[in-house]
Amino acid sequence: MLPVETIFETVDDKEFLRIAEKVLEGKRITPEEGIYLYRNGDLTALGILAEHINRQKNSMYAYFIVNRQINPTNVCMYQCDFCAFGVKKSDPKAYEMSLEEILRKVEELYRMGGREVHIVGGIPSYWGYEKYIEIVREIKKRFPEVIVKAWTAVEIHHMSKISGKSYEEVLKELKDAGLDALPGGGAEIFSERVRKIIAPYKANAEEYLEVHRTAHRLGIPTNATMLYGHVETLEERIEHMEMLRRLQDETGGFQVFIPLAYWPEGTRLGGHRTSSVDDLKTIAISRIYLDNFDHIKAYWVTLGEKVAQVALNFGADDLDGTIQEEKIVHAAGTRSAYGHSIDRLVKLIKDAGKIPAERDTFYNIVKVYQ
Ligand code: V47
Ligand code: SF4
Image (cartoon, rainbow, N blue to C red):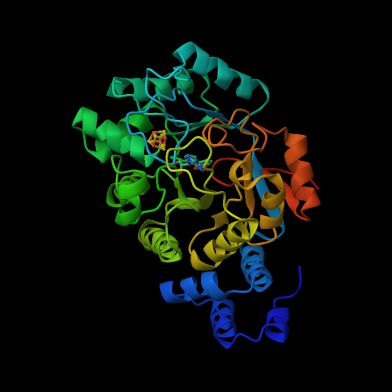
């Protein structure tokens, strides 16, 4: 990486340099400055600045985890227009796994030394509250060493609605059953304008944030996402980051921010794929904006392996994991693999010039691959 001083020798945009100086002094940038970086920031200079901050936080490590995604069903009553995964029960593609099938998949992960199951899915109208609890309880009973990262804020909100219980009661019951962490899905874009267009029926921004706030209060760490590249404006992306930054100031419970690039194939919303320039700018700006987040994930499933490698030099420090069976973004056309071996992830990271560090769900390093 070029030294950060290079920016001041090569860029002649005075406003950009003023913001860069502020960032290097450890000061927080404003929403207006975030929007300026999106509109006018030179891509290379943004990358150098964001990567400088990342290295202060994470040194030369790039993290990955041996994990598995399990999506118990794709039947979903919410039918968000950007999602090609959630289908109606009558759809020929509809499926639902039995508990035994789910446990077999966890066992496969366990046998290969895996550490985390990531469980999210469609939300069928006919599933009762107990079903969500039972899945967590049975996994933890059979595989106590496996970390269960399960159910998005949207699913927790839904559980609260169908059971009449508060978020706190639902999360406490899930925690007692063995839940260790919440994934970040369901955030999409917080703007009410955008949600009305792409996801009018599920939990709104306030509800998403309140579920995460409650989880943090109960000692359950969570992740945060942002689905970008559909109908949102740059202002709405920054507003989204601003809302997350505020909650993180309040609770400190977010572990990582994950920008998710939108894939349009097979969705009702349609549209286009994001450009690699947009992807890298979004990684870099989120690293700069979210000064109170330790980690930024370059999710190889949405970025593709090659852009994810470059992102590891643009402010990101994590690739997610082996995953084994990704279904949600594959339904929308991503060309990335369904899963990766440990060797492949280690090679991707080494070729990106970083030190591969296998981690657990909570970002404790379990093995460094020199
Ligand atoms: O909330 C749905 C997104 C999310 C599309 O917490 C799409 O560690 C792109 O949140 N194009 C679920 N994305 C996945 C998710 C996630 C993934 C990996 C790690 C973590 C974590 C969380 O997938 C949904 C939605 O934002 N999604 N449709 C689409 N067409
Ligand atoms: Fe259902 Fe989630 Fe897809 Fe929306 S994004 S349709 S809630 S699976």
